[in-house]
Image 1 (tube, rainbow, N blue to C red):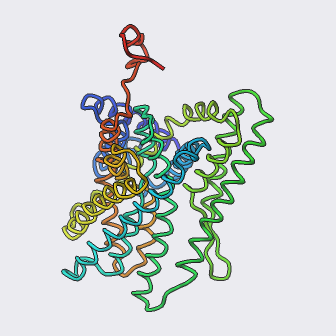
Image 2: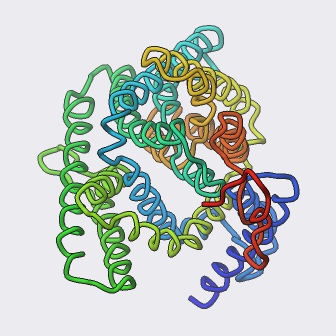
Image 3: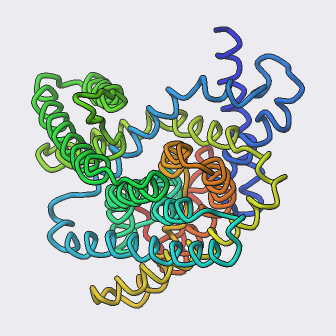
Length: 431
């Protein structure tokens, strides 16, 4: 226990120090945390085997998974708070259309590329794995996107649309993966499962929506009985942790698997709460301050669990590079076409797709399920390689796209220890 606490403290310090180095080259803090995790992970500093100083193995990193799950819950809860009624009225239809279309287009493009690769070189990837990877390509990581938005205080129509699309993307990705994985399994076994392809995905969506709505309503009801800011914040934290815990439960009845989507549950909970509670913005601001170190740990742990062994397999690199290239093409072109269909501004059409490139936890979870395929290990390693690339490059591309769209403003305060350097400059308003 003592060494686990030392490791956590060392992880936070490593993330902080790396963020200072990243600032010198204008990289997002998210990238710094990921690199810090990579440096103290089992393939670099962790190889020394010094207890408390780094992570000695991937299994040791996995022992801290409760922190990652909790952080994902708070990240999803905060994204859910972006679905306010006033925003839904103005861009709800566009967000749903873009969220669905860009995911479907990405899946189709990656499917076509990898299926062609299968027919050209069957030894590289099987047909079932090609179809499964196409569905995994649809998934986008909400955590990295949100952290970039928060760090640079991005604000504007594209930022609001982006957060909505990222949230919708996960629900769409879940359905696409369930259907594609069912088809892939049928190709290998010769029998398609209606329960696995249709019933279980729908059950997961419905159960997640119900649990999220119950959580949001219950939080709002209980919150009225507490008046101090600290107690209201503690209640919100307790509810997110409670819903994360319940979301991890799984059971089986009559051959039907029941479960929840952690991200969807917490997003719905946040959406319901922010729309029925008049003081939700003030409460969310306090929760956001509390979760800062937790989010940092999440990304350091994410960096530590990046498996560098995948870089030694030429087959994984070939398929992985094709997967990355065509997924990127799918996200950018899919977002562009769906944005044109919804008649959004040219700026959003041009840059939204770039902000949808980060990929992490959701894709890895899908890849873990796909290991049941005959060459499922290839699927897992290709996704690991793609996550390694996207997590290190994605946040910087998101920052660049938000800068180009004009939604990252000049920060009024560059140092918390010194007076605001822009206070006396004409033409700049500090909020």
